Length: 306
Image 1 (cartoon, rainbow, N blue to C red):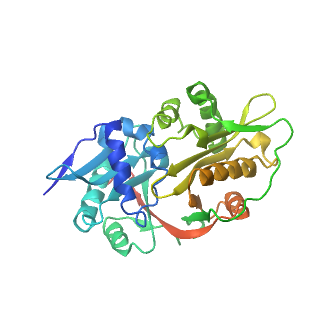
Image 2: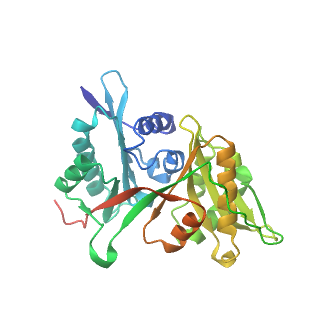
Image 3: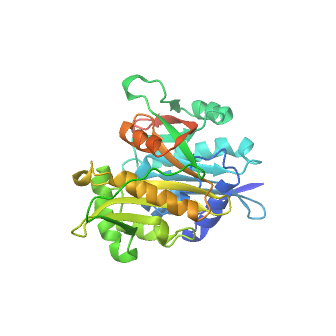
């Protein structure tokens, strides 16, 4: 018997992360889940669905992740066969219910790997469509990886710049202002960023910023480590447009990778869009190579559907 239960807040997050880690080949977001699950989407408990067995063991979870316009979910390998369609049905109901609220979106996206043919069939039956070949608006992603044995390119910081860890809560607000400027979005909030500092897997030494000679934050690179699996992930990374062209992205990414490898990571991952040429060039220059294609599925909700 499977029971859907209410989300209890931050106390549920460790179990949600642990569940995703049971099947790394089936889940795009694993190591960076502490970052994603800190977002303000989870401030509304009914944005989260949890499914458990009769003994209370978590079998699946889903999040209506408004900042990313994405439906994130993970399912226990032995339960996916009968739970996946239930997850999609729940998400469809929530997507409709969230219309005309701050948490709603006119369309939602789900990421899937090409080998997950069963998920793709379920998604298509639920009204989702792949965005891989829809003309000029086509959208696909790629998960890239970099092994520890590769040497890191040398890169010298411009005079007066420095790379150091974020100064904790005292610097969260400054980080948020930079993040918003880099991504041209107000999705990042002080509350979201502050919650990342409280996550069990958060490592202050892997939360890096580049400071300009006048002390202003100019770039950031937040790294996450799954020590048990010896894997790391970079999420997010960005540089202020005013300082681009100085190599800050390369320098801070290289420092983040050095710290991840020193901390035991054997492989480091990063996710990016296939058409983000600047990001792709940076990651390829740093030695990242494609590990898996990521298909993006979309379903529209225009408010007129019944």
